[in-house]
Length: 73
Ligand SMILES: [Zn+2]
View 1 (tube, rainbow, N blue to C red):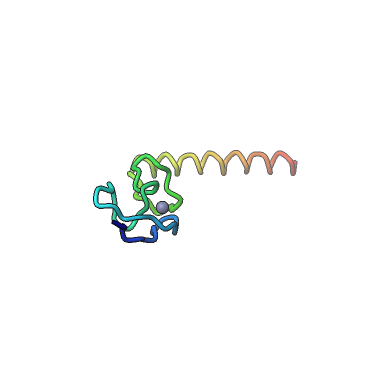
View 2 (cartoon, helix red, strand yellow; view 1 turned 135 degrees about the vertical axis):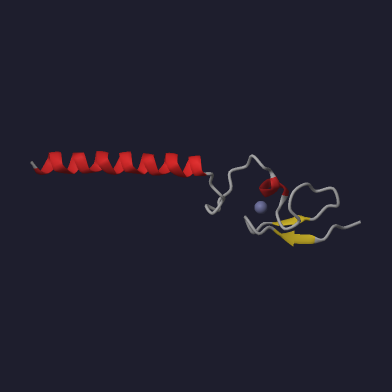
């Protein structure tokens, strides 16, 4: 018995939609794995993650600025 062939919305790979396939019906088994790193960047971030990222960006900007000023002087 054949399973319907679906196209994964994440990686565009074709996969068999099995009855017992865990996860989303429009995602291939690999992309349904909760621990897999998704190629899409629009995953929801927590406030803490956002804050940590903002601080990391700020620190990076500061480091680059210091570097540039030091080169100019
Ligand atoms: Zn996929």
